[in-house]
Image (cartoon, rainbow, N blue to C red; front, side):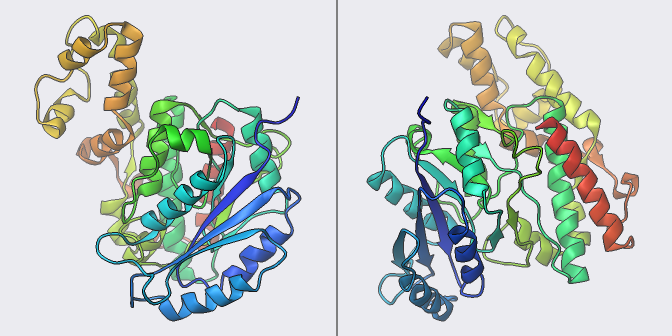
Amino acid sequence: MKPRYTHISVALPVLDEQENLPLLLQHLRKQTYRQFTLYCCVNNVEGGVGYEGNQLSLALLRQVSDIPLVIIDRSSKGKGWTGKRKGVGWARKVLFDRIMEECDENELIVSLDADTSFSDNYLEAVAATMNAHPGHSAFCVPYYHPLAGDERVDRAMLRYECYMRHYLLGLLRIDNPYAFTALGSAIAFPLWAYRRVGGITPLQGGEDFYLLQKYAKTGQIVRKFVEPYHSAGMVVSPQGRPSARVPFGTGPAIVKGIIAMDESYPFYTAEGFAAVKATYNLFPALYDADLDTPMTPFLRRQLATDDLWSPLRANYKRRDLFVHACTERVDGLRILQFLKNTPAYRLPTSALPVDFLRDSVTLLDNYRHNLFLQEMSLR
């Protein structure tokens, strides 16, 4: 049977990435899957940081003749971002919307960042995976940050990545629909799904999370590569580098440092995730009558109402539709807010098997890898 997805559009925002672009282009030149077009949005605020580097990037890209390439210049004088429309969120929106204008419903979009490395059969693996799941809305690609060789950076990167993996493991173990890690360099989705959710919300940061959350609410997310790629340990490898380009994420977390991360990015207890699962398990019964759930006090405060469920009963006359509406309401953002705002569910750093301030980078990396292996077994 002919595959559903036969062409890929690679979406690449570029801001002051003239040092990383050559390697990224080399990775693309080596791809075994040749049916792709690269879309680049070279962007910066009008007259702002990154302009000179972006001009070098534009010059480099304009010399490319061996890769199908579309260049969107939001950097040159008179073309940069102005007002509130700026940042990587707007760059991704411009890219995705341009692809939507030029391609048909069955185009597969692969989102990358310029500092990302991947194997020669990466696009082949993404296409094969999505063709094996033609009805799924998106693919949350497994990732693995390489060590930078700078101890301070590596410690902070490993602290943040272990936080993300620990959190995802908690959601995977309770089989939650919002079990995904949102990295703009590790997402793929078909154009029809992008159109169905109304596109990306162009935020200054977190736009990838909210896009994946839309996909989780309207369909299913693929979490692992099909064989033989999964068994081979296929991942995408974005750099873990200090950055202040977005308000949160890997780059800003590394800038904050390990001690500050204990407050911003805490680990959570198994009991916290069990409370989320217990709440979800009560959704069918809530169709008949109000019941207290572990998340009820938090939801009343967060949503500023004591009447959490009767409006949903009024709008959804079947139990299954009501349960889906509850799942949409108590979404990935609410889960994270619930855990973060419940002190009892914060895991003390002293309870972790490693000390990110004092243990060797090798030991921390081994802990990261163990979490990665657990995650791969549950995806």
